[in-house]
Image 1 (spheres, rainbow, N blue to C red):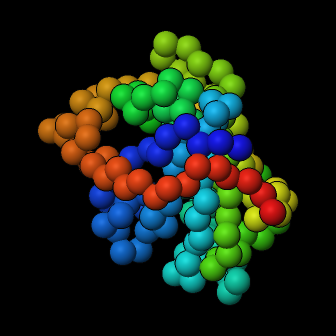
Image 2 (cartoon, rainbow, N blue to C red; image 1 turned 135 degrees about the horizontal axis):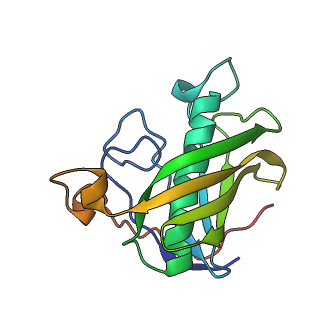
Image 3 (cartoon, rainbow, N blue to C red; image 1 turned 90 degrees about the vertical axis):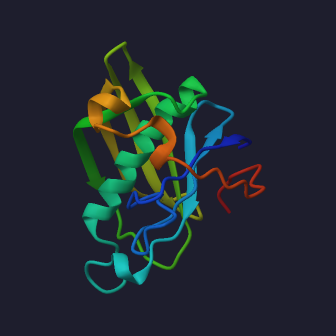
Length: 167
């Protein structure tokens, strides 16, 4: 599927923060169908049992993709919000040091709330984990005092990715 645009990365977010030495540092892309996708790898530092990623970090990525799916739908990174609920289903162990592809899409959107369906897949398209995330839309000022909209989301690193697909 074709990439429409690359989304910004933050400084310290555990999922997308480029300055967070323990983070995943995942890139996110707005796709032609209005969804968001990411291609990344968890690292050994993200494990629970050897060979498996910690469920909390899996759920964190699903959460991250949900709000970014709103950005993909609206074609802007100006909407923000906080998670009100998240349901995660763990289908298969998520490995570290292997390519993971994430996809999320908004399935319900109102002026105050939105709902996203999100999933993590291996490089062959096998579903590893999926979920439903609900958000309350808020401004950056309502979420965190003394922070501008792009102070934390300050990195836009173009990487030439123009299409994402499974093998």
